[in-house]
Image (cartoon, helix red, strand yellow):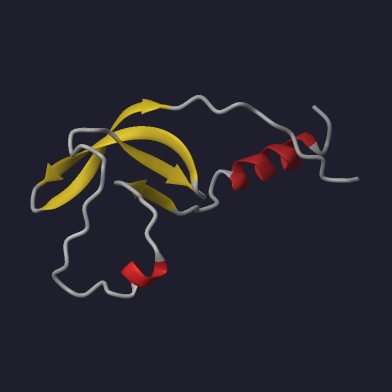
Length: 95
């Protein structure tokens, strides 16, 4: 084992501790600005998505899994249905 191998392993392990924002996307739609400006408390917004359709779990705006909403006691959670395959891509760090 080289002297820097342990440091490299520690570095990669430390990357796994980075926290990222995880979002669940229920539905989305586009609306004209004048309609958005009329949104008031109690107003209902309808979406084309069926309530039985799986939701999307996103990390940094990128979908990573499909899920469904479940009730957990008096709170809600999501049950992961499947994890999406992501094509790998490499970005050079030094140009």
